Length: 396
Ligand SMILES: [Zn+2]
Image 1: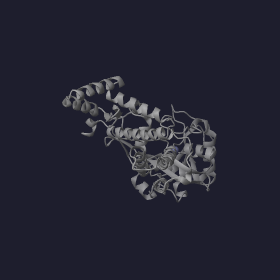
Image 2: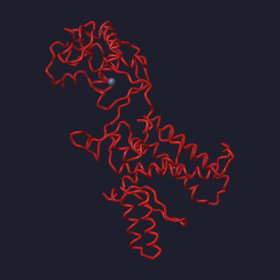
Image 3: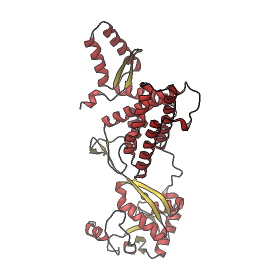
Image 4: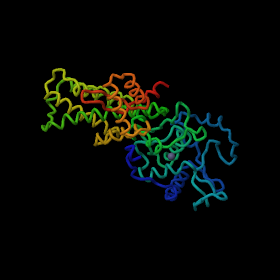
């Protein structure tokens, strides 16, 4: 989580440490007339909560019709759910006003969130599969315990599919984040995940991760090139001296960023919007177009700032550009099953072949490296390499 730039949680509560809060909440719900006890079990009475079903869009009648489990005759309504269950042989149990038992599966979340955040808070998250019944029941319990209870935003994420098949242990296409970041840079994984809106299913594939890796490399190479140019100038950049076309590009990006993030955190649009300022930066870095040097420096400084800020908000910022670039190169070499010195040897071999006009051999070397994700770049100063999407993968 840390290398994916996820912030550390302030609290990670355990249910077994909050038994008294859970019991107090159940007592409160009973006192408010929304739950009843039968032989050591306590059930929530859904008929007492007219809003039941609002989050998932289900109606109580639908639930009844869909009830396939043998109807528990002790419940007043088959849709009623357990707040407390009496102890069963071999299960852990705690003391309660209703005898020995354990909490139902939903009450723990209501009790713990109320304990740390109060009955009203901003954001509640979870997987798509938790909308019903878990979160529906959480809302019912919290509102029954406290009528001011309110959660402003429910954030439900889509599932991961692999090569368009659902990720599951039984299909054998199951793997962990640790295994992914052994092959790919954590920032590439993060960028890939942000490339899909969080409510949609995420389709994992090697091509997608290669594409994300190449994108991170491009972003960081642009920032590094920019820093190399800027570090030659000492004067600080004056906000009011930014050329109008750069200011226009920055303002447009700023507006797009705010609009997309305000639209239910629409990160794929934000990532696409980064293309324009990055392209402008590369144009300034690699083509002169008769610009005055001073104007170019002001533009680069302003663009670098705006991109850094956006990447920081998205959790994609790392302060040391060269370190990220080096890590991306190392991951690419690992996937290609090559060492850096083997690549350099190939480059030397190719340079020799070109000198003796053996273009067939030099092309073959370039092609072989491109197949495994090593792209060669020729410049007057010699040939260098950078990671790229393996051509062998692209052809699939
Ligand atoms: Zn929960």
